[in-house]
Structure formats: C-alpha cells, structure tokens
Image (cartoon, rainbow, N blue to C red):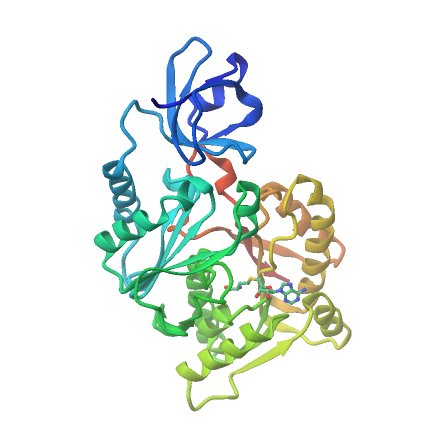
Length: 400
Ligand code: SAH
C-alpha cells in the first residue's frame, strides 16, 4: 500500500500551486510506514489527492513532488520525464556538444542533474530518492542519449541534509578520459569531469560567454586594436578564451589546477601564441586592490565570483564582499570600457544585486549604463513555481 502523507489544512496552498517541496512542518500525519525513497501520496486534510512524490524522513524536505496528477510513478513515468527534459534542450551550433540535460526541480525531476559533455554524461544525485534510483536512471539515459558512459559526481554538500555521503565514479558504460574534449563557440575546451567544479564546468555561464565573445569581437573591430581583458575568478579561463585573439587576457583565480587547465586549453586553441594570456594564482580581493594601486586599467573586466551567500543569514556579509569587488572593478576599467558582473547567490535577489553594484559605483564617482541584464543559460530553465531555481544574475555595464 502506498503511504499517505496528510498535509495540514493551512499548508496546502503551496502544494496546490505546484511548489515541489513538502517540509516536515507541513505534515499533519503519515499513514503507513514508507521506506526511505518510497513513492508516497500527498493528501489534503480532507483526504483529497494532491500530489505524488518520493519520501525521505531524514530530510527537512520530507517529500519531493514528482507529479500533481494521479498517475503511477513507475519506470515508464521516469523514462517519459527524462525524455521530455532532454527533448526541449537547445541545439544549434555551439550546444550540440555540451549542455545541461536535466535541471532538477526546474525540469520536474527533483534532485537530479544531468550534464552532457560530448559523448559523456555526468549525473548528480542530490537526494535520496534519486540516489536509490540512479542506476536505473543511468540506463534510461543511455537508451535516450546513447553516450559512451554515465559518470557520477555526487560529491556535493547538500547530500548530507538527505543523510547521504559523497560518491563519484562510473555509473554505466565506459570510464571517461582524463579530459573530455568539447567545443564551445568554435573553441576547444578540455573538461575534467572527475575533479572539475560542479560536474566539470560552468555550463550556466555559456550564454553570457557567447555575449562576451560577440562584444569583444565588435569592440576590437571598432577600435581596430587588441583589447585588454581582465578575467576575475577565471576558473579554466573560458570567458577570456573567447576574447582571444581579439584581445589579450589576464586570468585570476585561487585554484592552481584551474589555471593550469586554462593554460592547456589556450595552448590547444592557439598553439603558436603563448603571449595571448596570463594565468595568475591570487586572491581576487587582494589582486584587485593591488591593480587599483598600480593604476592599471582594462577595456573589459569579467567579475564572476563564487557563491558568497549560502542562506539568508549570510546576505549582509556577502553584500559587503560583492560591493568591495565591484568598487575596485569599476576603478580598473578604462573610460568607455565594460564590466560583466555576476552573483550566483540565490539569496541575493536581482534587485539587491543591482543596488549593491550601484552602491559600489556611487563610491567611485564614475558613471555606468546597464547594457543588458544577464541570467543563467537557456539550458538551466527555472520552473515558474520554483523561484529557488533562479540563482545566477548579472549586469553588462558600460563604464565611463
Ligand atoms: N567564470 C568561470 C567560473 C567562475 S567560478 C567560468 O565561466 O568558467 C568561481 C571561481 O572562483 C572558481 O574557479 C574558484 O576557484 C575561484 N575563487 C574562489 N574564491 C576565490 C578568491 N578569493 N580569489 C580568486 N579566485 C577565487
């Protein structure tokens, strides 16, 4: 018998409105004894069917909803849900090779992330409900996408909240190579799916890198010269790779591995031009202060820091961090230059981020125009019923 999770009368609204999380505090009663990960029915206080999802008593989010329809959640259901997510991904020139195929709650598959890098898939199981089904999901993915293999990167902190440890390794098919070669907008990238950040790469910034590439090309054309680019928090140097050879770039990051890979990638693309880019192992806060002191200026600055606010309590401290960085970034931009500035903290709203950047600008006495509002890439959609899915926000600014 499927267990029935009875919801408190005053807590039904979000579930009816298709928010996919049922917190322990919303539950009046559990009828039956569901095992961890079992499919359960979510039922109103009056006994009406509301939704169906998977159970985890160890998590604060005790049910993650899979469907609001009274339909069986069996292998056919999972296969169809995976197929639907995969079939709507953007294709086109640059996205054949590399994209997010499943974006968890935002694709109505809570807890499941699947990214494609060439012939390989990388799966992240963020919840127990997905963890116990991951072998079968990997087989379905092989049938749907026909990759050479599915590699697991479930080495993420949030799993602890589900009572799970970290796991990595081959789930299905062959071992991926040490570096997977993929194409991004005509440039060759090397992805380390074992040790790289996230599932190996920041796919969420792809659309913004495309925009940056077009901007650098156009500006270099207009000015008829090579541009100077400062790529702060560069990771493996993708933003600046797209600026080459229209400009020269300095990549700043605190990860030696990321910078070494950045150098290898640049060499793979421009074997005869080791003058095009620099790789500087440094703390960006300190590096920027130093650059200000030395009165060095750039045509374009990319500022893409890691997540500073992991929850609402960290927002104030994070805001000070963003302000410091943006303040000094403005100072190192030549008049008429551009700043691409981001925050990937979900807890910092788009509105607040713009206010922080405004505050930084005000302290410099410079002027700036918003040229574009920026978001996570198209293959990272946000379910309208799940605002938590929106995290990356940014501004393209022209700075005077
Ligand atoms: N823009 C990149 C992604 C950046 S992710 C891309 O498009 O691929 C953030 C990066 O910041 C990581 O590579 C991390 O190593 C680096 N980092 C974190 N804190 C840092 C600090 N204080 N100084 C320099 N780099 C830092």
